[in-house]
Image (cartoon, rainbow, N blue to C red; front, side, top):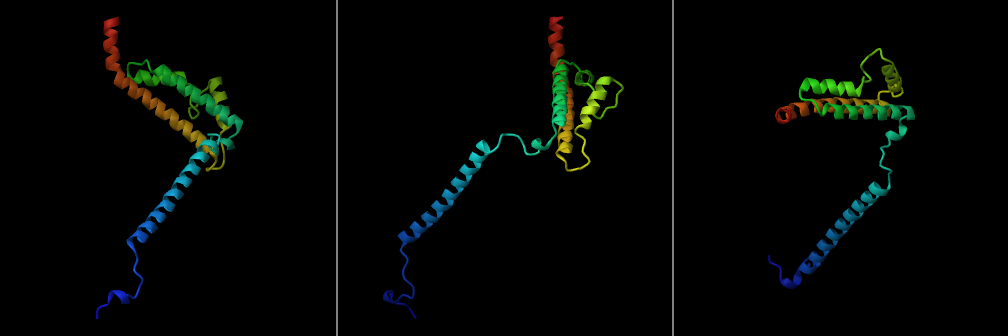
Length: 166
């Protein structure tokens, strides 16, 4: 049982119509993607002030303590950059950084540092203060490790230069 061309059960779809429909659907999807991406970029650039929402929840005392400890870490990195051995880099870093929040000490500066660290203490484990303290401690450990690695890598070169200078 064959069909004669004139007696088709469905109307014949022309290739130009199919092509036009495919292009229309593709254009709509691409346009939606471009509009969505543009809106996200505009919001990212102009919609926020660059600080995280958690940073707005941290007390001013805690921010001051974090800023001070960040500056001490930076001083430690700078001081350790001239070390010629791993042990010397660690010692120089720790001396320049001063006592960390989790290091007990009898000095008056550590008492002040401990008081500032207490400003970031929070009884809630999901508090932004807890995350801030964890971030600064991670920064401290990473900076100290970096100082040790840098001393290991640069020590032979530094000794060679010193042999010509001195």
